[in-house]
Amino acid sequence: MQRVNGKYVYSPSDLIAFVENEGVSWLDRFDIECPRRLVCDEPAEDEQIIREAGDEHEAAFWAELQSGGYDVVNLRGTSSVSPLRIGNRSTVPCLRRYGRRA
Image: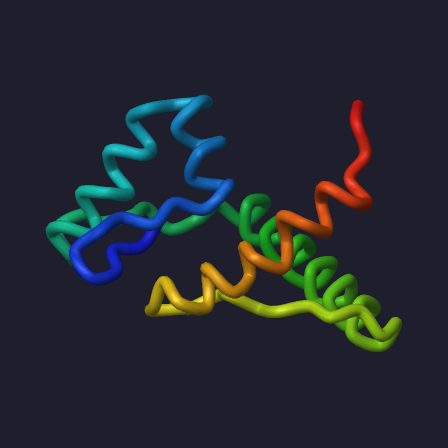
């Protein structure tokens, strides 16, 4: 979740978090509105191992996409809605063309 030009921008992960537990979304928004007021617990050792493994997997998959010639855009840390709109214009047609139905 980000606040850009006074408006909230939600990622798919934010929406999933909301469906699973509205309290998590409330805390995320509170943290944006009142920075440094919440103090997070240090992650347990097993949580840190899982997080690092996930980060490594994501980095390897990203590298595989790039080396495979795929046109991918990293929006992490984006502080403007403009790149999100660009990503959306590219993603939606691709999903319509190649997306699979479960």
